[in-house]
Picture 1 (tube, rainbow, N blue to C red):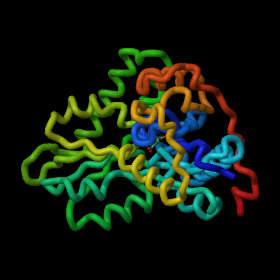
Picture 2 (picture 1 turned 180 degrees about the horizontal axis):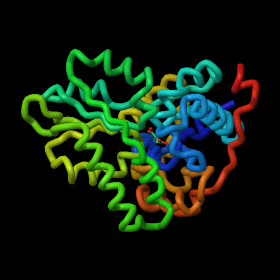
Picture 3 (picture 1 turned 60 degrees about the vertical axis):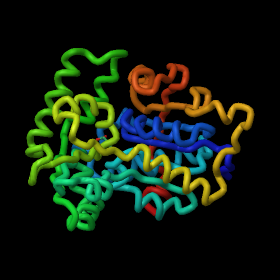
Picture 4 (picture 1 turned 90 degrees about the vertical axis):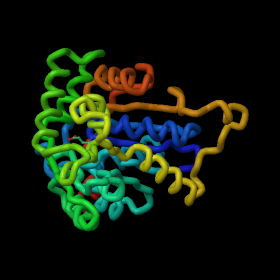
Length: 301
Ligand code: DGL
C-alpha cells in the first residue's frame, strides 16, 4: 500500500520524459522519484501501433507498482497517453495516473495569430485523443499538425555516447528544419503560426535547435511544468505529498540525486549520458531493468 513516502513513478518510451522529471524535481523537491525509460522498445510513436504501446504501458505500470510501490504514475509520453491512458485507468483503477498531451488548449488561448503548429509523433498526431482536443479548441485557433517520423529516434540515438557526434547533431537539425518547413510559415503576421507546440517529450531537448530555426519571437510550448503542478494537486487531494524535512526545507529547491532512481530497458550508458547531459545526474542513479509483458490477467481483462 503506497504511503506519502512512496516514490512517484514516471515513464516514457525512452529518455524524452526526463524533461518532465526535471519539471517534477523543481515542483516537488521533497519527493522520491523512480523513472523508467523503455528505451529497449523506443520509439513508440513512429510505427509501433496502439496495441504494442498499450501492452508496454500496462506492463510498466504493473512493474512500478509491484517493485517500487509507487503512489502515482506520470506517463511522461504523449504517444503512450494517447494510446493507453484510458485503458490503464480502467485496468488499474486504484492507481492515480497523470498523462501528458500536447499543449493545444494553452496554445489556443495564447496565440495572437490564431495559427498554431504542433510537432508530435505519428502515433500522437493520428490519435483520436488529439483529434478531439483539436476539435474542442478549433474555434479559437487553427492547428497545423506535423508527424515527425525519426526525430524522437534520432534524439534517443544521440545519447548513445557521452556527447552527440557531429553527424547526429546534423541529422537532428535537418529533421527539425524539414518538419518546421513542412508546417508552413511562422511569424507574427496574419495567417502565420506564432506558436509551436512540442507534442513529444523528447523534443524539449532540441528546443535550442528549433528556436534557432524559428527565431526568438515564436512561442514554444511544452507541458512539463503544468504536468508537475497537476501531480502536486493530485497528491494533495489524496493526502499523499511527502512530508518535508523542515531543517533542509528552506534550502532545497530541487530533488537531489539520492531521491532519484533511473531505470532503462535499453543500454545503460545511454541513460547515463542523457541523465548527466540534461539533468546533471550522476551515473550511479541509473540501472538496467527487464520489464516482461503485462500479466495475462491485466493484458486481457
Ligand atoms: N517521448 C514520447 C512522446 O512524448 C514518444 C517518442 C517515441 O517513442 O516515439 O510522445
